[in-house]
Image 1 (spheres, one colour):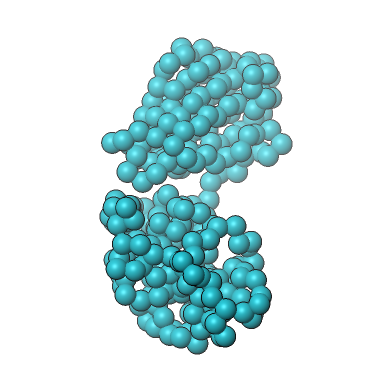
Image 2: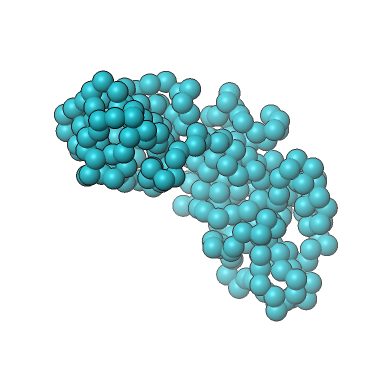
Length: 278
C-alpha cells in the first residue's frame, strides 16, 4: 500500500517545478504540505547535517503531518531507500524525551515496531524504508553518518487576513465548508478574508454554493484556480448566487478571497468543498 502511495505522490518531484518557491532548483517543493525539501546523499553525522541545513536558513526535516511524512518517504524511496535518512528528532539521553530541532512539540510519530529503543547513544532519529515497501522511524547513534533532508515549512506565504474579522485561512482534507465572517449573521464591513483549500495530490477541489448573498455593488468573493491571488479566476461572485452552483479547480488548490466595503452588508456565503478524482 505504501509503495502505491509513494508512486502516486512522487508527482511532486516534477509537477510544480515551474513555480518552485524554494531557495534553489535543487530543492523540491511539495504543494500538499507547502514545504521545501533538500535531499542530501552526502553522509553526515546528525550534528553536521544540522549545521549544513542551517546554512540555508532551514532545519533537518520536521514531521508534523501525514503530508510531510509522505513527501519524506517519497524522497527516500527514489533517492536511496537502503539508508537511514536523518530527520530533525533527537533526545539528550536514553531516558530523555524526543524533541524536534526547531523546538516544536512532538505531535506526530511513525516509529517502526520495537522503536524507539533504549540503546546507549541512540539518541537521534532517521527514516528507513524496509524493502522500499514499508518504513518508519528508528533511533540510532548520532555519530553515524547518514544522508539527510533539509526542510523549509510554509514556503508560500498566503496574503494576510484580518484575524479579528475572518475565519481560519487554511482548510485541508477530503471535504469541508467555508463561511463568510459571522455566517449566518451578516458579515462585517471592511472584511478582507482568504480561504486556502488543499486536497491530496492527484485530486481537484470542487466547491458548491449552499447560500450566497452579498451587497451587489461592492462585496465580492473571488475564486482562484490555485494557491495565490495571481492564480487564474474561476469566478467573481457578488449579489445572489443560486444554491448548487459549483466550480472545480484544475489542481489540488483553490483560493477564495472575500472582501466587503465600508457600508451595507448581508448574510454572506456558505460553501462546501470536496476532493474529486481527475
